[in-house]
Length: 335
Image 1 (cartoon, rainbow, N blue to C red):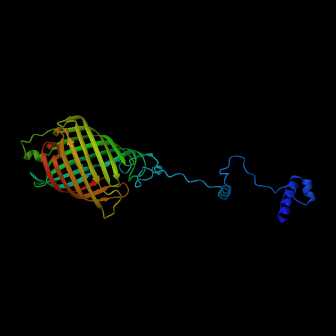
Image 2: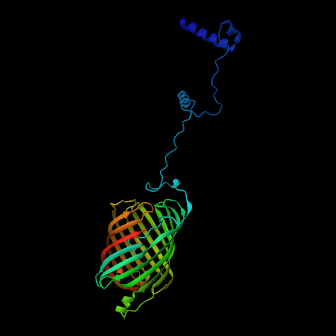
Image 3: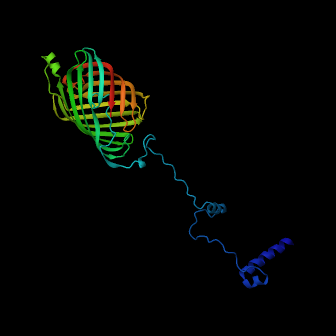
């Protein structure tokens, strides 16, 4: 009986709401309370599930997270989107560094080596390399973009056992255009090299026939860093003008050196370089170095000290066709 009374009362209320006069007779409200307007456009929730509207009302500003997209850029590089490119005059830092075991690179170095047939020799390089203009990032430690450099050096051999007389010297000057993006580096440039016998050497060896070994060379090179400390490289050079030497030369090698600033403690380094030259039937030389290195902050200049082994055709091109085997120690400073 109670259920029947409730049902009848519900029917009466609905009818009264629909008919205001009847509602007034029973003292009932003539209209429903104002309701929140529901937009007519397609709701951003699933209407088939009642709980989805409540969730939407509770979190009206909820935005689903974007799917994670893995980046191919290694974590040790600065983020590309935080590195705007700009023009910079005389920038600090280099994009394409000299090969660590490349004996014909422009740098500051001094090595004391023992040659199996000639005794102790003092091989030194007095030179350097600097940036002229860059279009790229302003991160001097590991810049990306394009940069034009200038380089030059005198590469001299002294007879360590005979009053340190000058045996020979090679002069080099060049202008490489370099590039870097992420792990990859590239270089296209020009260099001129000329070789000269020392006056003291000519006086002590009157029968020596001096040669005019010169090269004007276009070079194309590429390098790749699988890890921050490891660098693989290859280079081809073609001389459009030369005397004594032939046009083609090739270099390839591996550099391993600390990538980040080391402080006073330093870290180990190792390097191997192979240099093949057409004028010696694509023979050449191989150089192996190992020791301790210190990397500075800022532009990341590198100081190294360690051992060197050289085997092959002479690094002094006045004696380009002579075979030499040297072992010793040295100190190298790279810009």
